[in-house]
Image 1 (spheres, rainbow, N blue to C red):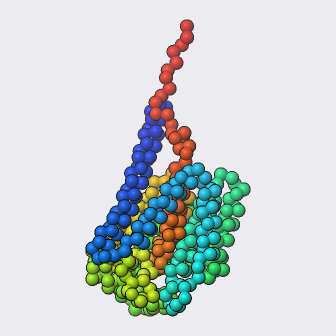
Image 2 (cartoon, rainbow, N blue to C red):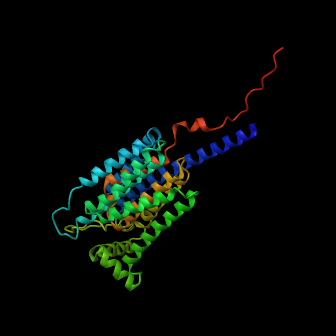
Image 3 (tube, rainbow, N blue to C red):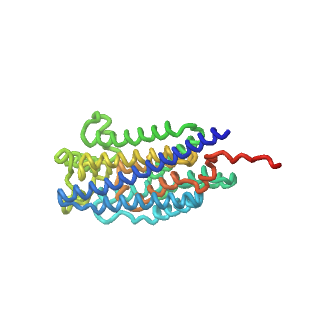
Length: 352
């Protein structure tokens, strides 16, 4: 009995150590993202403020999510979902100017906020210990999906519906590793399709179909980003230097392609590494598997949206992504109480 308790305690200590190593690796990756943006900006007289703000918002959101998720694992995601919905509703409309330029970023931000709100409510539904609250939370999460149509965001409606379906399916998935691996494949396919369309690798029929749905102007921006990346593959052209004076579109409206053009292959690989770290942190999280897979689905939906839009240029979106990741990887405060005693109880000597 004592040896079994010691083995369990040793396993718990090893798992805790692994999570600490994963957290440290994540902070190092975020620091490298900030450092590389500064290096690339110094090499080409760029403006790294946007990247630095995104890194700061993500790190702060993750820290706040860890703390609030440990204290209020149900109330904190519900409050975050409500805030995301308010931000999506009050998002400023398209700016005056050509109709082909300004609406791209706003639509991506609204869709991302709706996907994150749906994921937060689904996480709260899986985490609540009160059975009577679960149907109400599921109903609230389901109500976010048609909200995308009311806000004029079909992408947000589709993303919220996908997150909701993945969350329902997560309840019957015994192993989180397979689910997270599938989500990584989905994100990789989305990024690969965008790169293939921008570089002209896709077959003519597929390219024509995607171009018609996405819009030739945006696809043209993607092609321009790929051309810039080929001119400076390692360093990029510098953060904030994609747009030219008088150009109404200062971004290619694709986070991977923007980093590829402005910060080279290193910047794009660092972005992929951060996403991989998030999935690894979810895999090692102490939360139930449905909570972990739901958060992973919402963050994957955000990755897909960011591949075809300008969502990550909004601080509210990057902070919301960090919050959701923090809620899903928070460690319960009573974790230490569930660890078995590492030493056997002292032997009682008979009296008399």
